[in-house]
Length: 591
Image (cartoon, rainbow, N blue to C red; front, top):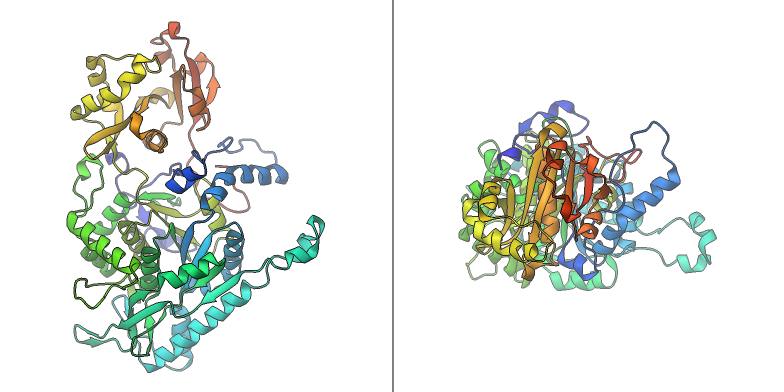
């Protein structure tokens, strides 16, 4: 929809305002995250919003106890939902070499204690370049890859070894005993340390000579040893996968960190890929963008393809004809793109590696980013965005790009509704679009049973057709499986939500939440501040999603004149989320 077509900015580091305007093309606005996934439904969690979502309008100080309790009440669906999930986390070399690395590892330890399985892929680029500089050598890059000569290989091995030992050391102490004494016998807490597993999980081959350039000891991913990584994860270990790969001829090769991380995420069929970087993505107003659909990310990357080698490489790999139904707002990768992506994903998951010797597959293994383009940040965080969209194409449902220099950003990203970074999602609005005249029969089929039972007001076909421009639908395999309507009242900065209906065979699968989220995003884009509705039999569903009962006086006068009082409807209202500039750990509001 043109309302939120890409028109923002892709920013660089948060501490450098000039970088915020360096690149354009990101959509502005924010929305409520959809937390209903297959894993969550297994635990009976259906809605992520808990309690009030409004920020404090008064000038009084927030009670620390209330703030703590409020956070926990909001976080509990995420705590339950993430338990047992597998996250691949790539930590940029800028964060690894900076003063915030210890806190990042501390938060990873905390999350591991809550039942999340971690595969860590730490970056080494800054450390390698520093070691080379200290030895009077100069780093060399071509495209996304480093040219690894013997000096660079020695520096890479040293950097990788130091970082691995640092991670093991920082994750070994466990929680401080002082804070635990009053909660039980000290002895039982001594076992609360993290087990760290590392090893030769990465098989690689030489990149070789490409376009006349010899890359030396630079490697490409050949195999991810998924079964051995899973064994470590199942034994409650945090797995560290180094970017140093091992060839079949016994060589050590220096691989691209993001290529390793994205290959791991695809091979493991990870629940999330988390990219911890040293900055954030902003819109044109300098606000953190908290959500992008894969379609929005894909459109932006393609828009920048002529200005960025990394973006151009993304387009080449994914297939330039990925979006077929842009005019309907539906994201449909082309068959060529699906075949390519599904092919390499299946190859990795079978433990064969991308190049399995039969010559079927060719090209990058995972998605490499790096080189001079990334170091200069001339395109902000477009490189990380391309990697995120790439793994979403391959089946990873969520990718999070967060600022590791903001204390607690990983926790805020995972346990608050709007997060602290940017989430790229594959499935949030898949198939959701504005209704067309061809959808009339499908909408009628869904809402007729609810009209017959008195849940919805009966509409004639003529009335439905006249209101069709206000309807949104979810389409799957050519059939309409859900619908909803939004009737704006701009003078009151409010909108009426109506006719939310899901086909009987698709109920209980989160389609209603998806549509309500979509409607809220549309309302925000129209400048509306609140939504209201009339209902006779579905109040509980809406109350769980943040609506509260109100009087008829809260309804716009124009709408009150048309209310059929004989139905005895109840009135509910919801304040939409304000567009905060971001989230800080010192003064965050419950979302």
